[in-house]
Amino acid sequence: MKCNMGTDNFAFDGQWIILKADDLVYSEDSPDGLSPAWNRFFNEMERRGIVASLGLIGNTLENADERFVYRVKQLIEKNGHEIWNHGYDHMLSKENDQNVVCYEFQNTSAEYQLEHLLRTQQLARKRLGVVLRTFGAPGNAIDDHTTRALEAVPDLMVWLFGRLSSKAVLERVVDIEHPVIHPNLEAFQQQYEAKGVDKKYLLLQIHPPHWNAADFTEFVQVMDYLEQKPVRFITPYRFYTQYYQ
Image (cartoon, rainbow, N blue to C red):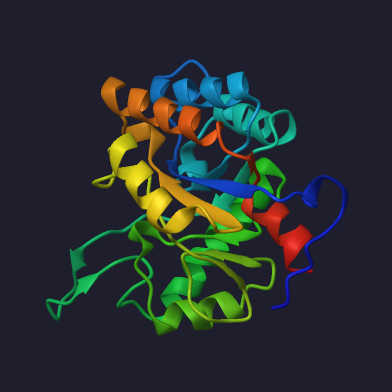
């Protein structure tokens, strides 16, 4: 796809930052249906005035009460965050009857994958009143069937860490978490200076609900570091509408 570099607020010479925040689920014991770790993250986003994209695990909407639904709608409508399709059940590393290790979107049939995509799309439309436009696989585990399944869902236009397809694929270049789950400022700085500084955009994967206090502190320091650069934060679908259409 040819990029249209846009006008107005999108015509600047800096770098776009897309925060890919995984694993948004309902927390029954929380006053607003979101875990304290998620709320800590959202408070930080609001304090900085920046947006993130939130990977919703679809089946959480089957049991979530109206507290969660109301809070997520606020995150979309008031704070400008994007909710994206992170699969239906987030299956990871499960052996099937043939002793093949399966993920929700790897080593499963195209029919299975399509069903899971559509379930989450339908639940988001029914409970949240939104059409999800972006997809990212649990564990970033995908195969050829994922491409086939996504082609059958025209509402999904952006694929995070995806494969060549009709979708707009946003690629992985550098990471905040080293290893996964644990933000690391020093490791991020090294990667950023080596191969990220000249990119038009960076898609940065994070897992806020799994961070401890030290992890969160490292993340805050990464944000401080980035905000010293000529960067702006944007959501995947918003980026798509400005640069891929």
